Figure 1 (tube, rainbow, N blue to C red):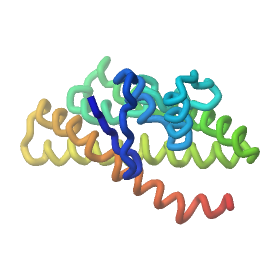
Figure 2: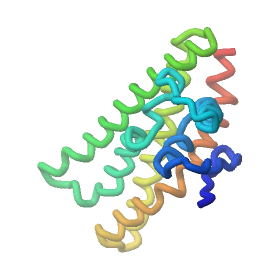
Figure 3: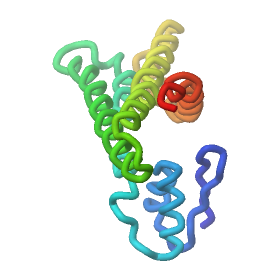
Figure 4: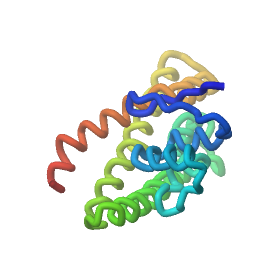
Length: 188
């Protein structure tokens, strides 16, 4: 089976003998870690825990999408006790952002010898925008728009959930571009 996952317009091939879940986890890793993992897999050496951010791996990475799920399910979460799920989804996603930013800063500052704080702020801003703020707003507007068009709660939720795979790459690219043109210039 010759599976392929696109990452930053650079296709990543599944190595022969590599399990599907290992391939998916490797494809979701950061670009630097992914290159290290690929070469290490091909050499059949185990990957050191310090080289891979475990929060960028499935299933932990899915916690970053909790708020999109909350936004898609919002039509069903209007009355207590279900109404507590909606803000809880943001709490889960925000916690993921903090934990991942910490791990990213730890790995990056150790590998480059740079300062922890700059990497943490960079990761925090990027993750907050790309994982919580922008996708939450987009899914919210999809659900709202379908509702305004007369869609039922089920149709609103299905539209919100269906939009998630299509918005991830454009949002990531947009946030990356914005960070390169603004915040990251301050750290140089």
